[in-house]
Image (cartoon, rainbow, N blue to C red; front, side):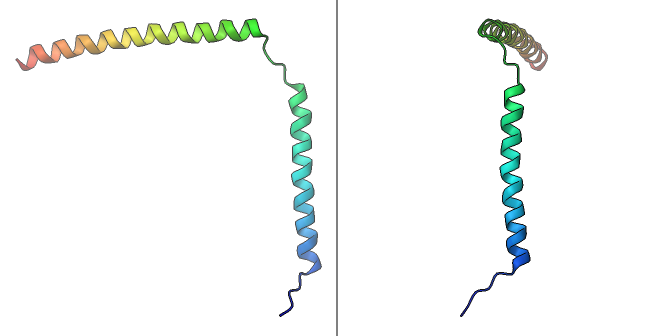
Length: 76
């Protein structure tokens, strides 16, 4: 049994392969344009996220505790 591949299928495969290669070239070019934050900016931003998360966690924990007390009071 002989397998034949038609020229249009091979051309389409080659075209798709070239598009894929071009995509990764474009990604590399765009990657060079990114302005990454400095270490100082990254540390400050991370610290801010941790502090805000801790504050919100504490607030929501307090609200949850108060609601549980209210529900226990109502049910008893």
